[in-house]
Length: 570
Image (tube, rainbow, N blue to C red; front, side, top):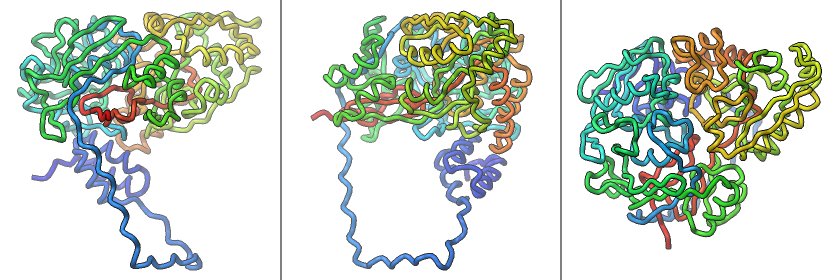
């Protein structure tokens, strides 16, 4: 029997043929609607994009190719995979973790990701695949989703992975006492909409259509827990379906992960044996001097990989012939965010005034070394398929000063500006360029770990937001309220706008990318005109390792994966 094809896939094929979708966008949306990557790739081949008209007859004809063209040399075969060995990764701030659903930063999830896994997986091309799922199927209105679980998967203690684990984990996401960002991300449904169909099928009943359900399953707090063993603290019962188990977790020092042996991992490697290839992964906490200490540790051989490297590390190592440095375009961003429930930012004129003080090219060049795309004060990036170019506001301190005066601050205003140490250059540029408008910003810098203790509470700050594959995803995390009207857990600015939310819901249920982009134009303009964030630029996600580390590839998502990584040391 052929693979089920959603009724909207032919429409996607037509958009691909007309050039309205790229091949990558077609594959992403086809897989979102239940097609396998193999089937989606085949369907893309059956709908070739429109080609330009032939060249004029007066064009110079191409000479015929000689029949004795040399045969190209045979490529050098890839080295044979080597099993075993210990990989060390430099990291920062190994802190106390308990409930994965409560993670508020990617670094918290890096080590537990090796032990607990996700229902889906997004590859380096930004395409979503089933992982612990075998497949997903959506109804025509995108309001009912059937999630078919992979059979034969076992937790590291020998328990079978079943629908009970998925239902249990999802209900944790919707428990307000847990305080998970998944509650805001999936605000299109409630816990009552989770149905166990059988031992390996879960059905989700949504209150509104949502095209990105599989991508939401890859949000980093969405690691699947064992319903028999998890009681709120993963370190007390680190039972997951992943390829490694915890051997040691020393807060502020290191984490040691060992390859599963007693209960083999469910996925095999290229040699037909259970993964992972490595015997051991060790995270070493080298502190927050990530631009100097971490690169030095890699160059000296102290570590093999840098987890979540920053721009300064990339610049320091990109010319080293012994190091692999990858810069993957992404929607990652450091957001200048303002609490709209705290003066002076209760007045939109003050918010607009400060946003007008951003010299975007200067911030991008000096703070981010010109790596990344210019932002427009809306949390949708040019890399997102539904991005709408609404125009970039210009630096205008004179207008900003006028707006401050109209808001009741003719003599300017003093504001504490709270930032993590690695965002100081960004903050200092804004501080200097905002002075002519009357903003007197007092920078309060602190270690990044300390910032994450106060990130939702400070009046003015800079918060890092990781890449999400679709532009409709972060708004649900950061700029809406729950069903009671209370800002969702990650709405750090407390900004809620009814028109913005209505447009977001409409966009989430709109498959046609051109129609969705039209909605996003309105949504983005609202955030630009009356929102709570300044976004001068987006930046790349970096992946850095020694060259002998194999199959450690770049990805827009800054997630570590060592499932099929191996070492080829001489």
